[in-house]
Image (cartoon, rainbow, N blue to C red; front, side, top):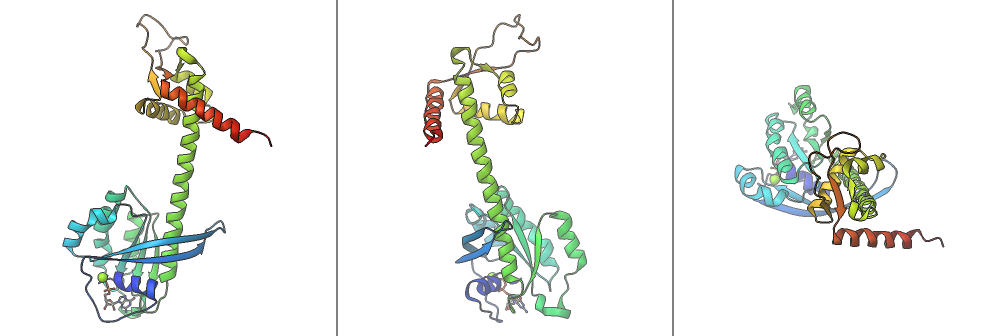
Length: 267
Ligand SMILES: Nc1nc2c(ncn2[C@@H]2O[C@H](COP(=O)(O)OP(=O)(O)O)[C@@H](O)[C@H]2O)c(=O)[nH]1
Ligand SMILES: [Mg+2]
């Protein structure tokens, strides 16, 4: 009743219909959005938009499979009905649980109601308090006001989150390669975690140990037997675990080296 279906109709078909049709279950629409990132880069996004009937049934039965793989959500509140603001919490939690957290954008809809608008500073403060990072746009599916801005705002947040995740994955991949190479070069002696973190002073030591643990888990590294307790490590402190590459780990390190040589070859 807040205008979810109407906003979707406005976005996809640029139409409005004042008679109410209850959304049964969920519907899906495709939409291509072309915009510019904050850095001035062109962004072409092909969206699949899901419109969910806001009944308890839909929330219970359809929620999880529907929200899985969602990259972001437009939370539609009805400016004429303040209770739609607090009720949106349940939907936000459901999406967050299914996705592990995605950007969302509040559309405060029916702004054309003018004097009929009942959502005011109190509700806006409520949203700001709970979701300090969320953006809000006043929209009207009836006049089209703010509708494009709301979806563009959401898409830009989604794109920047996806880009950041990609950068992090690449950085992890590089770190993984560096760790494998460093350890494989030590052969059977292996390398202790302390030595390893000292070599990677440009990386947080927590990231080094986390990635080393991952490599053990996927069988590219193995933990060397620690020596008897009477042995004291070189630094005098408790001995840090030592790692060496497994057969697969050595292969992975060597293929990475060959790959790097090819890439770095001067032309
Ligand atoms: N005045 C006004 N009415 C709207 C607006 N958006 C939707 N409505 C009306 O509100 C009712 C519910 O809209 P609908 O899109 O079906 O809400 P949904 O249940 O969230 O999908 C319909 O009668 C719409 O015509 C708007 O921006 N302004
Ligand atoms: Mg609907």
